[in-house]
Length: 365
Image (cartoon, rainbow, N blue to C red):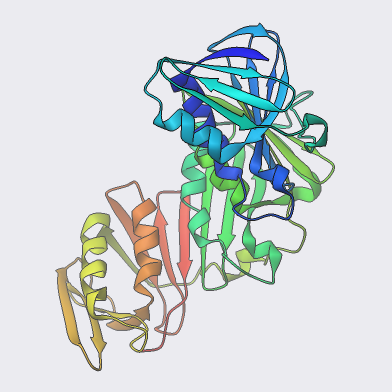
């Protein structure tokens, strides 16, 4: 193989593809990238056996075609530290040379035949959605997915389709986020719903959105394959049963307040400064015309932040994990949101327009 790359284009590909490289693995080849020449482009691939990604780099000059497997961290570091506009890769049977204007690196390569196969995108799309819209939906749901759970379904994000709407739902059992995304193409999902790993969704969120790119989606066996411009992501789906989340969305609340997103975010952050593991959270007290955020730590002190609001319903006090409030307020793009409350022992409901809702369980203080 002899290829010259535009360094910026190669760096963009590596910065995305290497996010999938596992830090530890019993299979060292998974810490490598596969680089394959095609007719007038170079395909860079990575996989951890659950998720795969390929990135097609077209800003190249191919003198000799080839297929190589090289350590991801070494190649990425060399390209990142280079200041050349053009970088050349020249591969022999067991090594690869990375050549700049004043530098030459040699790194040992692996047998491409030993690298796991990564599915490509073949056939018609089952579903199409704008990348920017999908990424908005990911950002408004992924933070609520469980990090480590024996209930594997909670480690993913539920996809449901109704007409030309895609619903993305995530929960860790203490909070739940639901984002609605408009589809470009009406679709049906296998068995009506699927669960996509949070890791796969996070990878999609890192794709650079150029010119209103459209994501094409196919479902093959128990896998999802997504293609957007030069990137293809393939992933196993999560097996398991996602909770019947519709049953826990409150529909009988009598207290509704419209609040400033920025003001409440600031108030929660300030009130949480003196909260600790013992105090468990912050208290939100609503009374006529006022909203008061307080926290108390036995050995530290207490905090109180007052906010004037338009509220005339019955007074209520309710405790929340402040981080769960901060997480949701960060992803609300509108200047205002709605807070719906019932009783102090029932979840809080946050809505932003018709496309986003969030449920957060209260805590005892």
